Picture 1 (cartoon, rainbow, N blue to C red):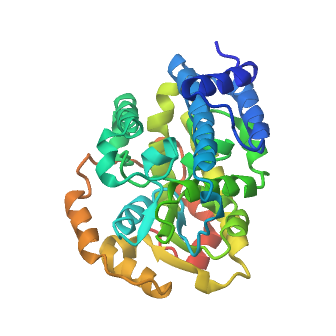
Picture 2: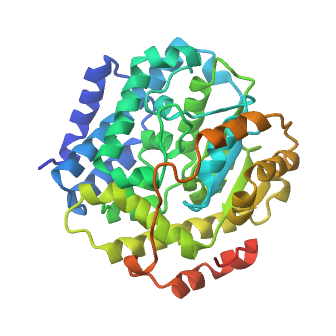
Length: 383
């Protein structure tokens, strides 16, 4: 059985040996890594698959740090690039953020964090070179293995090496994001992270974006992650002119859905998992995220935010995006590209996601009560 705390040096060495590099950058990640490893040792109960996955996640994150530092060494101009008025999508999981992200990413005026470049950050190569890039091919294989391990996940949340993915993949380089809680019983880490100032993590995020986009510095950035709910102050400390799209949907629908999504990945990696306890911790986590976001938005310029209901987006995604562009004074001319993407990726093509609050031992009225202020403030409708 792995001692994660006792293996921290070995994890660093494994990443260094694989890449022939040894510069991990500033040490602002080491406390988080230590707390995480201690929690994996003392709180989690993992299967052999889970242990291997956790080790792999840690080494992958350290490897990505090495890639970033080497990338900045060989592209010294990247660190001076400004990222102005990025578009940031945030909302509870399962509120349409992924579909919105993928559609806006079809606009050639935007650049985003493609899944494969989040795993192995470097200046984005020309699209024509991707299929011959070893890093891209490795990312495709990794996605294939994820769906092989958790086949039901494909119908719940789409991932592809060439599509934009969530910012938590970058946050992983600082070991500070909600996915550790989603995948493993790490209560000690969760308690520590709930009090953590994410500013160093966002500085790392900026460093990645500067490197990945350094060949196209004039293209506007598009970011997306539910983790942005937890520390808007830190996000805006690093990206002060960010334009925030917050998506909204009935938590009675979203909380059981996110439980189902996370469980599809979590179940093969953990022993003796308690569905009800997991569901309660998931509910607690996202109640905290919404509360943090509501508090952080108070007193800020409303023009920096656009609130989009799930219902409005489902009825007419393209019209919703037009409204976003108009509100933020962004030129819109990507109608054809977005429609073509919709036609090529119809809803339900990988299966139907079925879930209910009862299977997780959750009471719909209790969920609604705990999010009562959220319903009121953003006119969220019970579905």
